[in-house]
Image 1 (cartoon, rainbow, N blue to C red):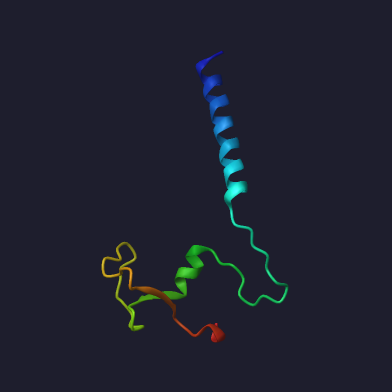
Image 2 (image 1 turned 45 degrees about the vertical axis):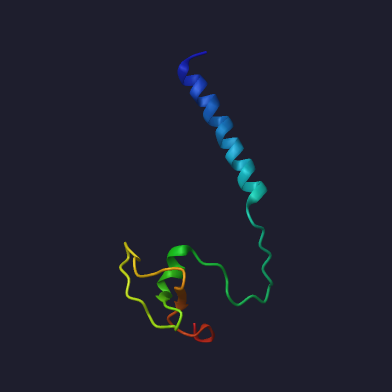
Amino acid sequence: MTNSKAKDIKSYHFNRQIDRLVKQWSPLIWMSPQEKYMPLSIEEFLEHVHVADENGEKIKTSSTRMSTADSTSYLVTHQPLGTI
């Protein structure tokens, strides 16, 4: 067996193992037909929130660093949920 073929076989088995683990441990979500708030991508979600402290005050952050945010910080929607 060639080295390339051995790598292909190893890669194939690794990918099958990853697929099996994802199927085994991924959360299952059932959405109600009347659900108003459908899932979003992370990018789209982050467009609608900002970081706030424990008092609800907006914390200034940069897109690359959130050094001022800590375990008492929260993500808060820019607008009340009922208006989005």
